Image (cartoon, rainbow, N blue to C red; front, side):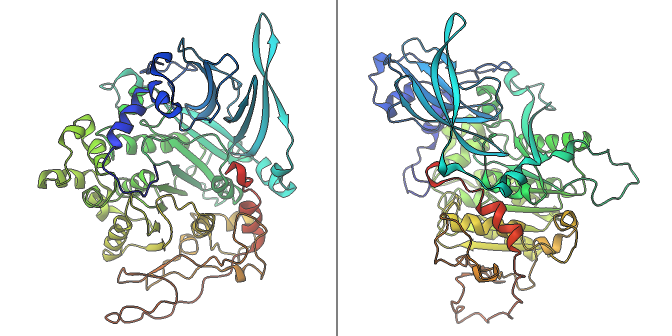
Length: 551
């Protein structure tokens, strides 16, 4: 269902179907007679390396192998996406993508005993694989070969940038989990993306103050909260990594792909358990000498923005700067304006939220919702914050981020707000996504001779998120990119990158060029943002975009 379609609350039923992991959900989507289908039981506790349960987000139109009762699908398996076959008569589940691969695999098409798939990693752009059944020792097995495609050719510059990076899936022990089910006591996973040299540098000494000892770290948090960060290619993550940042993508407990006990353990504990998991993961990389605690940023959208704003309030000394996209900042405000008010209740009260849900929250409910929200920790925030908001968002309406930003501004915090007037919750229009990450990364101090020093986000916070005194924004335009438009079919050739809205000091969004309300006095003109250096921006972002059919 479209994130912005008005409807009666059905989140709870969808949520229960997801948690149960039953194959009867497939019978609805695939129009199969129920008597044909055997249930794939939910996996409450997933042993290491074993099937964690079905967590698939889409189905092919023709997913069947020639036997007529085995379907092929993609499903989350920890921090990876894998390809599975499911026999709907016996409920047998088999992994058919390579078991020794830490890449993510996604099935594209099935034709007889032939499978077309896409595989990728955080440092490897998508490539096509062809799979077929082949005779192996005493049995049939799947064999995979590369398929060359003119649509998936990447420049040598992009390959060179990515070749200097590596990634790993970390398993991080959790704390204070003794009272939780066994599945929620397992180590959480986090994907660590870094330059190849980051793992080999000498540990920092206590009295060592070298700015170049470590690349700055960005903690990246997924939304949902019942979603997952995968080892698949992301143009945004590759862009940030190519600029010299290390990334830590945390799959806190409650993420998909780790069994039902781990997933359900977060219900009723948002703002506490998930925050603790992120801090545990951050402490883990710092203790293992993979990050400098003085150079840590945090980035998240939706529930990831909820976590981001919680973290800068609950642990204000751990993060130097933050950026959020359509964040959940105040549940007591959101419950009356969102199209999923039942989500607010389930995540706040756990399973009891289904019973106490109402469209008319009581004062006690509003108090509980406020207590679970980042806005309850607002007075402790120290880090500058960048807000990226979609004006058409019905899932987390723009009022949530604006209220939090204005409250921060009121107490004197450094804040920058950008509103995209035509975007919904995901802010995924190519133009808006492009602008979002330009504003997250740029403008960087181009006067520094050393590229390494230029990319030190934590060393020069004001140039990274320049906080204008009148709380407005002047963004780089295409004309500032040395007079050249980016060479990418993903961006409209004649459309300027200037659709983001200014948010003036009075908090009233206005499109650039629009006159302010008569009751308001126009604010002083702010100097234009520094032009962005094309070699640093154009190649990493635009050339890394996957071909349109795979987006």
